[in-house]
Amino acid sequence: MKTCALEELFDVRYGNGLELNALKKSNIGVSFIARTSKNNGVVAKVRKPLITPLFDEGLITVAVSGSVMEAFLQTEKFITAYHIMVLSPKKDMSDEVKLFYCHCLRMNKFKYSYGRQANITLPFIKVPTLEEAEIFVANFSIKDTEQAMIGRLDLSDLHVKSDDVATGEPEMVPLSSLFKPRNGIFSGGVKRLSYKKNENWIPYIRPSYKQSTSIDAYVNKNMFAPDEIYPAGTLYVSTDGQGSHTYSYVSVCDFVPNSNITVLIPKRDMTLREKLFYAMFISHNRFKFSYGRKPKGKRLMDILMPSAMPKEFDGICPDNIIASDI
Image 1 (cartoon, rainbow, N blue to C red):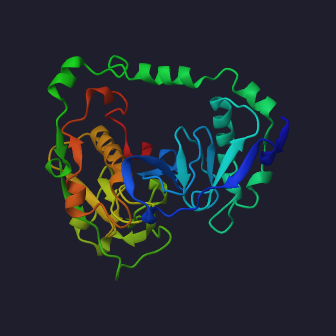
Image 2 (spheres, rainbow, N blue to C red; image 1 turned 30 degrees about the vertical axis):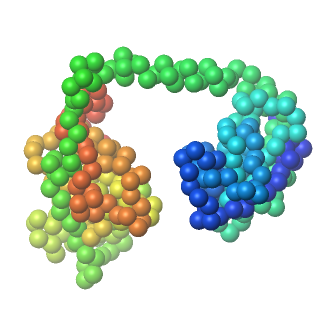
Image 3 (cartoon, helix red, strand yellow; image 1 turned 120 degrees about the vertical axis):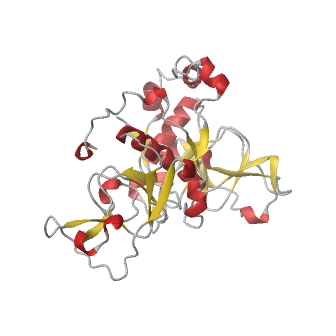
């Protein structure tokens, strides 16, 4: 594939370099683009500053620090924060081609880090030539994709019955009506080993964004009361950690949770499949919390859950699955 420097295809320039706290937010204002990887880079709508020029829609914004190399095609007029570069095509390009170059820029994310920004090297990044890009997107259409997405919203495609929609089933209830929370054990004074000494030593679980990395250490189960040890098939939630909070899992073996783990004890009999469903549902509420707003206590237990697992999940996970298969 033929490549060229980014600056051969785009005029690369810095954005406005504004601070959000110095602007007034407005629902009918212009888009304020910052160094985020979400919402197309838009963090707020603000009133247009009097002497600040707007960038036109159809341009590409790139974060050169923070969420480095996050690139987006802007569909409305906008202004930017610090460390945002704006790419203006030197030749006519379709939106499909621009989105292709946004993807190419994101694929270069691995070259940078918090200490190595992209503000100097961005214009010289190698990307496919315009001819190569047009060949690649020849069979893609944004309009066709939009129509396909709209088609997927049809209730029949989602296997949702109209009477279910009318009656609001399943009912949404707070987590506290389904589970009883139990806090983990504070690590102070707990003897831990980095390896499993023998069969008496079981995992000491900590918050983690992956279940496979949630084992902090191994502890001797004989040193704990029976009600402090939980069996395989137990549902638990990470309640702390900037990158780990709210992730929920079903245990695959006996374990002892640390104080940043909340164990959820069902108030009724639940199959393993139901527990896995609720673990997924709890994790999907992660956007509501942060390192400064932890999912602990009432905040966690007030999360709304379906009162029962929807029928659409029948058969996704067999009832007779064993913990070691998870």
